[in-house]
Length: 110
Image 1 (cartoon, rainbow, N blue to C red):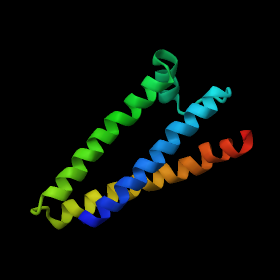
Image 2: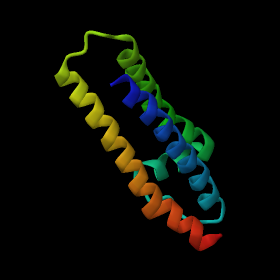
Image 3: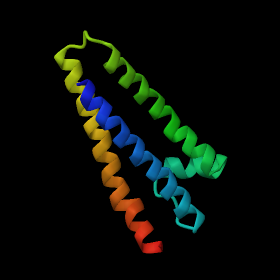
């Protein structure tokens, strides 16, 4: 379980770094953000504050969960299944959207 978290956490971090970079690049060349929530936050606060807030809060929670998983030894199997499932869903979500949206736009506009 700890090994899974220690492997999947850097993958999520790298996917999010690419998301921030590609979003910044694409908005800079005039492509509109597709997510209406993120678009609203960007229009009201700017792209850098929007990325810090929309990425910072979930990552704060993710690091907290990762810390708890790596320091606790009393997690039961049900909790392990929920945590592993959550990590797999997050990685799948980011990988899918980074490829279908940002990566394809980046290739089109580069």
